[in-house]
Image 1 (cartoon, rainbow, N blue to C red):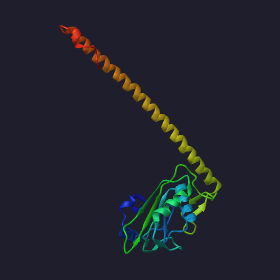
Image 2: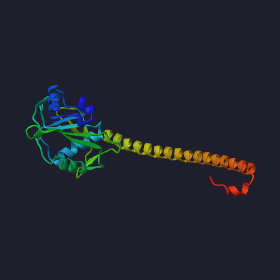
Image 3: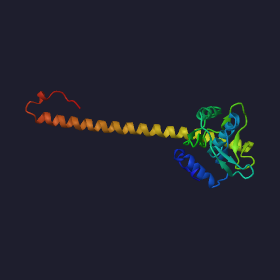
Image 4: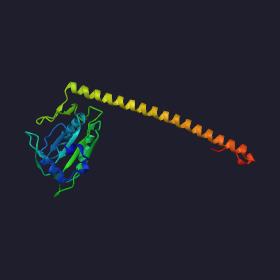
Length: 216
């Protein structure tokens, strides 16, 4: 599905309408919103995406609540939606990686796309909500509280990511030190070569002292 793989900036009002005609069903990685829900509800959805596999929230498309398929794509009134989205993202801890994009307008209407990336600092929480939300892929219940087992996996995922970052940092530091040692050896070799060439020229020069001191 293009909307899950392509850069958001390639989509226009017209291409979103064409995409809707393909009749893609909501799922773990796709969520339709006819209008923006309140901040708390949208924060739960964003956190759930970050806790699961990531995905795209497409605002301006009405879905059939029985089968999760789009039924109308008219967009929403253009406005300062970026401020609201920023508030929603700021309502999540830790803040997940995301992209926000607004299509061109058509008669004052636009489509809004929010791509949330799968996080490696799980679990992600919505403020003032101790629940861990995940995407289920269910049409009737697309967002649900994580089971204790699933929550444990999310905590372990964060631990693995932290360990991975520490190992990568240690590897990078080791590589950098090796590079410095290698560069210093090369510098010393070049310096010795230059000094040898200088000494040879001075020996062969009739008035070697006039050459002045050695300078690399």
